[in-house]
Image (tube, rainbow over all chains, first blue to last red; front, side, top):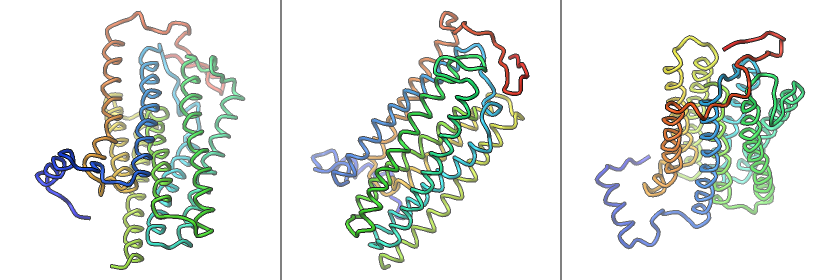
Length: 207
Length: 118
C-alpha cells in the first residue's frame, strides 16, 4: 500500500476543501453507508456512556465472568471476528470479479453470524431463566441486567439485520447480479457490527 | 498484477489481520478474566487493546487505510465525542454523592447460592 507524507495529506486536504467537488472521494452509496455507520456509532456510544455512568454510580457490580460463561463469550467473539475476516475476503473476491469465491465467502460470513446469533439467544435464555429481567436480577444492581439487555439486544438486532442484508447480497452474487461496491457496502456494515462487539466484549464483559 | 493476484494479496493481509485480532482478543481475555493486575492498569490495557483492534478493523477490513483523510476524520468523530462525554460524567460522579443508586445492598447471590460482598 502506498503511504503518503503528512505534507502531501495536508495538500490533498486543502485542495479537497478548496472547491473540490468530492471531498470524501467515494461513490454516493459508500458515503451513505459511512454516514449511516457514523450515526449508528453515536447511538452505541450513547449506550456505552450511559452504561459507564451507571457502573460508576452503582454501589457494586457483579463479577461478570462468574455470571456469564467466559468460554461462550470467547467463542462468540472468535466467531464474529472470523466472519468479519471472511467478509473482507468476500469483498476482495467480488472486486476481482470472482462471483463464485464471493458467494462462498459470503456464505461463510452468514454461517458465522448465524452461530453468533444462536449463542446470543442461548445466553439470553440462560440469563432470563436465572431470573434476570429489565428491572430485576438475582445479582444485585438492577442496572446490571438492564444494560445487558439493552446493549446486547441492540447489538444482536444489528447482527440479525446484517444477516438479512448479507443473505440478499449472497443471493444476488450467486445469480451473478452483484457489484464489487454493493458487496463492499454490506461488508462495511458487517465490520461495524464486529467493531461494536469489540467494545461490548471489553467494556461489558471484561472491564 | 492481475485482479486475481490482487485478490490473493488481499487474502493474505486479511488473514494476518485476523490472526492479530485473535491474539489481541486472547490477551484482553487473560487480562480481564484473571485478576492479577491493579484495576487502573487493567482498565488502561483493555481500552488500549480495544482501540488497537478498532484501528486494525477500520484500516484494513474497512479499507480506511486507502480512503481520504477527510473520511477517516469523519469516522473517528463519534469515538472522540464519546471520550469527551464519558469524562464529563466521570468527573461529576467522582465529586457528587447525590447521584448514587442506593436501592440495593452491595451483596449478591451467585447462581451457586454463594453470597458475595463487595
